[in-house]
Amino acid sequence: MEIVDHNLAVKAAYPGDGDQSEVQSTSRHLPETDNSTNDPSSNNGASRQRLSKSDKRSNLKRKSVSSSDPKTKPKAKRKKGKSARTPRPNYTIEEGEDMLLIISNVSHSDSAWRPKRKGRKRMKKKPAKTKVQSKVTKNKKRMEGGKPARDTVIVDSQSKDSDLIDQVQPQANVSHSDDDHWGQGLPVEVLVNIFQYVVQRDGAVPFLCRASRVSRLWNVAASSPSLWRSVTIGFCWIEPGKSQLPKTEMRIKDTMSWLAQNRLSQLREFSLCHWKKNVDYAIQVVSESCPHLSSLKLSHCTGVTDKAFQSLGGHCKKLENIDVQNTDVQGEGLVMFLDTHGHQIRKISFSHGSKSEKLLTVISRGCCPELRSLAINTQLNTGFSQLAICIPALQIGCPKLQVFSMMNVMPRPKMIRNTPTSGPGFPMLEELCIATSSVSFFSDQDLHSLLHGSPRLRVLDLRGCSRVTPTTLFALPCQDLECLFWGLYFNSTSAASSKKGLHLLAQKWSRTLRELDITNHAFSEEDLEVAISHLALGEGAEALRLLNLSGTKVTSQALRMLIGHTVVLDYLNLSSCRYLPRGMKKLYRGQDDIRQLLDKLE
Image (cartoon, rainbow, N blue to C red; front, side, top):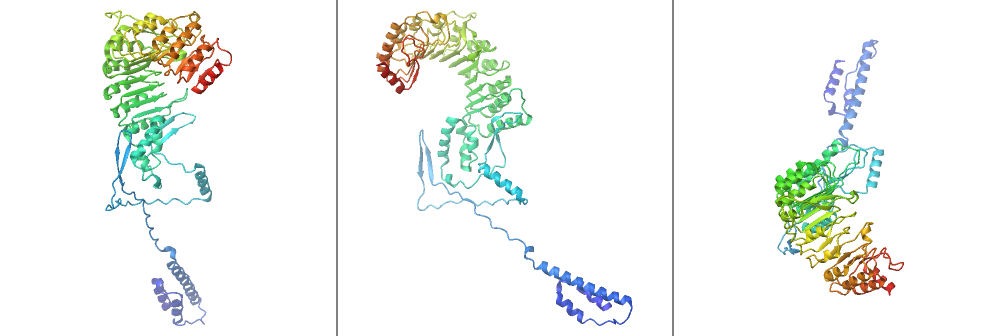
């Protein structure tokens, strides 16, 4: 038994040196034991010997099989695929004012330049999907239809808490596909010029943000600062009665910061529309990152405080245009800005409100000597509203004013100490608008005080001013008036009284008049016929484009003469004309439609 145990120990120490046949051969040469004895210990020892031999055989079989299993061998590394190489551009681009010239610079001796090969990133192993998960992902891919990823996220949340529309936010870890071989040979300058047409029509946001995710070439083109010179971000508003969530507010702020730092370095014109919160933050970020800003427009925004205008005054030294119409401006920020930095402002527009008189007082003091355009308006449904204006002081303080508009706001004369009763007028004024949809008290004296020194006037809008007479209009110093809007769009007793003198106006401006509106004026038939004859037979008959005769006493004979001699007339309003037959009292658009009316009149 000692010999048997020794051999088994040797085999156990070196299990891999032999196989099943070697174990059998060693067992044959072992000395025989006495099996005739009845000693139970000897029987137990023999049985243990047989069991140990069978266990060793099974162990040797398992290890031999495991050593020969090909699955245990190390896997061979896969070869890296060849990445697409971008060839060297074989052209030179010269930019002109209205064209791009592409010049080839390739000769027979040139060799194509190849970029340095970059290594690929190893993809992490994903856990094995079950059959149900694989089916779900396949269905999602089919429904998505392979939509391209975006460089920036356009948020269009329609959740219950917020309604944030068209907000742009940056997204990290952006990957571009290298399969867009169709656009690799297109010059970036050509693509930038193509994008320029889209930006002029639809705006920079969100088109450029979406185009930057198409390919690397489009991303480079969409990041060109020349495309981001005029940006309008609108419709960032929250539904009434709902507050902005903190996460949404942080996304808006991050978006504005990212755009200002990465895209708006050459921004010239910036507009915010329908913003109810974060207006101060947006203006502050833009003013700090955009030193070339020249125009700012805030339309239907709320929550604008003094901080916004303080930031503009400290950073934007080239700001010339401020438009805050229909925007709630809190505090005295705009008044202080004009008082300090008004010398650089050339155009300002605001709505009638509690700060209007203070703004006009600052402008009349001479704080804006370079002002070219002044516009004050209200909404059409606000009714009658007046604004006190010292016209002589305004003429002295703004000698270079070219456009003066007061839409739906009636000027009320106001006197200031040490100011003459009659001012020098507006010598450079070209457009004047004193229009209203309600009753107007604007008289001949008011019109004379405004325009007695304006020989360059081209556009005169007096819609609703029923107290102005043709005699005062005829006495104006302007000789080249192109547009006269004098319609009455409300029911008034003054409109029923007969008026005379329209033929004088038609005779004076028949050479230059392009658009004429005399809606609901009670001129006689004879006066209308003479006036139309001056327009049709005068030197400017080939330039008349718009004529609104709605509610007048025009006759068929006068219309026949007018249509027969005017060539470019494409708008003719004859609605509610009582002296015309039925079927002709309507609006005519286009030259073909007007020519068909001439056939009916004959």
